[in-house]
Length: 269
Image (cartoon, helix red, strand yellow):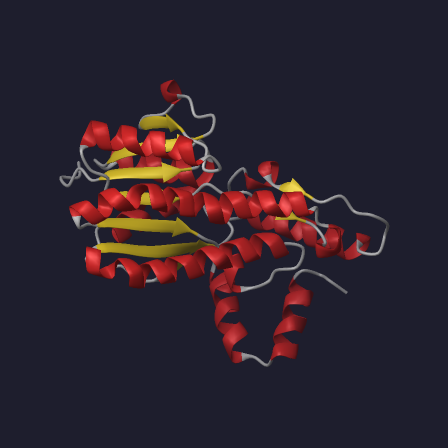
């Protein structure tokens, strides 16, 4: 068992990466509060909280309950997320707003709720679950890529703003992991046949990257290592070699060659 008894709040903990990380940390001796809109406590090993990251009052109530029970909060893991795929031309702006509200504003609401306590205790860690997709405007995932890129930039600003308070921040960029995201992702309806062929091929590749992705169990040990680090790095990239290589190639290759490589990978022709 872990001796530190650090108190961890993780959002989006009812399934997927959130459930895997929350369960791992609990098993290894952390005091874990897993939060989501519909989480039911009797089927999870860790503490559960019903919390909607789109509702400020819901977050404040949940964070307040943790502080009242434990007296401190050491780690916030912003994992709750929403996916959206489809041609940018046809994206519903209300769907885009939902993605931004959960992936960006939801994380920021949660950060704002825990920071007064973390500043007062002069310690704390914020881990934002981003995506390798944040490093590229991936075809048919414009809104999702943009939301995760926004989260990265917010994290970088926080690192500077919070350093003097002893509070650290970082983001994790997972690649494809085998989770339920394919079932939960919003899909834009096509209007006409202009994108039909490339969209169907790309959609299949996107789904395969999840179903053939890494095991969520890999993420727990990686998160524990970050939590126990004295000096937390800005970015932790966890994915298959090709996914990580794509980020490096974007910096090295001429734009037209990199763009062609992306189109080839996603069978857009």
